[in-house]
Length: 311
Ligand code: UDP
Image (cartoon, rainbow, N blue to C red; front, top):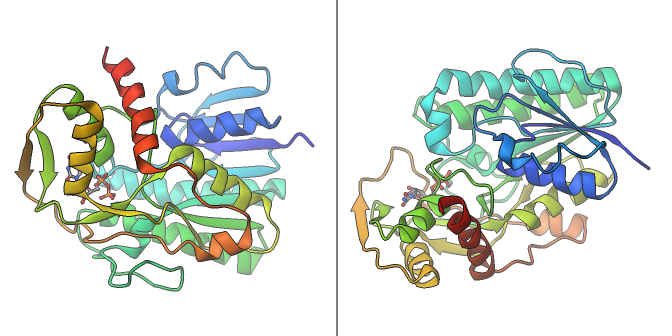
């Protein structure tokens, strides 16, 4: 069956990889993006394909696209990007969710929400499981994204309870890979770009804080398997459970790039979560999915991408 699929934020890092996977499996894909953080170069290879359509559009304004499945990914997602214009970020998160839900209702479509590990905030439970309600500072600098995404989940579950929408809510943990923006401020892109330029590697705080990094192909595979199944609406965590400190990540990136960079310790941003690690038992038992790409292999692939992008 050839689905009509809408991907909001389809020109972004994750969105463009999702569009690739959907086109590859034969779906007709409409990509909706306002190019605020997405880039045409992420999807230019798809624009030649008859199955693919790009609509330049802000998800804050309502839109009408015939679809069987809607993937709602549109939102700046790196802390640097989403804190640049926090009012716009929270509007995108909330109005974008409402518009995706209303379109899904009109089309009787299944609708996937790209939620986030940020709903757990500076978590006090490790690893983070889906039952945990989180520890978010509602007035902090990360709240525009965290609370926006938490409200997105509320909207999805209320539309499910009240209007019987066929929802799927996935909580996406840190993901990396080709097509990350060079200057979006995320740790993997920062470290690789700094290492390739032999510039200081900026470790925030003492570098003991942890994250668990999932390679983008694994993540997309998880999103598709979860969205395709009929048993569970979520929320489900999607991510790689291998935890690493930022200091260790810096050392790994330096080793893999053969860089001469030195580590430069800088102040820790406000409300930076101390530990982040997904409990992925729920998605593992639901669908036959687990991340396959080990960090060093994924980093090598990402380094190759940035080498080319910087040349
Ligand atoms: N970080 C860092 N140096 C950088 C960028 C980020 O040490 O140049 C740290 C940041 O403080 C956080 C972790 O790396 O503890 C992950 O940050 P990122 O912005 O990638 O995403 P987050 O997981 O915080 O949403």
